[in-house]
Length: 396
Image 1 (cartoon, rainbow, N blue to C red):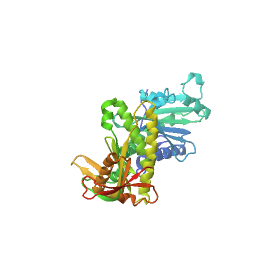
Image 2 (image 1 turned 90 degrees about the vertical axis):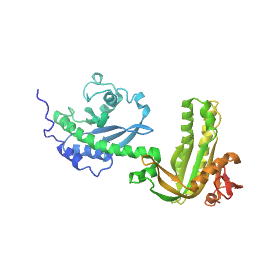
Image 3 (image 1 turned 180 degrees about the vertical axis):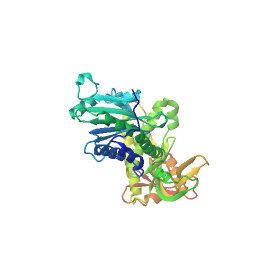
Image 4 (image 1 turned 45 degrees about the horizontal axis):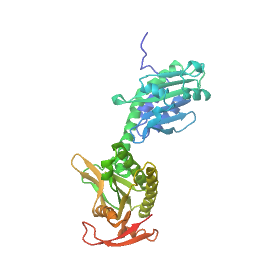
């Protein structure tokens, strides 16, 4: 038998050329994927449904699934969590077979279901009137394998010419998708480790040591109490779970109200609310209120397992900070520095001494009064600053 001619003309040649030369200005793979499916229909391939499954490097999600069906102009995107491989939707699926090494999954949906593969997906496709389904791995560099599927409702399914045309797409689609996915991967990594705003600046080219801008912002520093004692006495995994729960309680309200967490420092965090947002200072206190409520709920859950309640302190100040790249020639940190950051840190340290959970400087308090009820706690010496600082407590 003669080997197939991979260079033989197919119905998809125009789509291959478009993928190669016409997608340079397309940023997102889901848009390219949807347009590809529409173009395949336009050249006569009886495509009714297609999915693209991508493994992604994300702290919360294992992958993403793009779904296109006849009549759609855009693909639907569904995120897939890490536990999916333990569920029935994955076990026995084409994705499962691909991860175990299969190079093709083809299912004739017109034949007796008792003779075919047993999975809810195939039953669903039969109920939609689909007649044929094919899945192939999409190969990226360094052994990475993703997945693409095609289905039709044509009586008799895809013919040999349709399959040859679809296969001819795969090498080019692999290259086009890998470029977009790696771009998204780079963005995700930066957003995960430095925050969304810093990520945008870095991707825009702000990578030179010593470069930065002056930003006027409200600064919030939070620290967990008695963490050394906890880490010395608790099992390691319990300590990690505790920190993650604590940071969730603090971080989610900050992000929800427009703040940006620049770093986690052991059991502490540093966040800023740039004053370019007119309600930045009020937003910070709203975030603090919600964080306190979340911590109260967390302590209530922990009490059910006889764990002691978690205590913390928050220091808040407002002022100009230098926002940019600081570090060695080969290792940089994108952060904020300046006297205003030092002040917020000192106020956080004073919360324990003064028996308050949240301490605010007068400079910050003046920007939120009288919208919030604050408790005046007098002037206090602050380490590193020559004059006593007038402080306020916030109960939330």
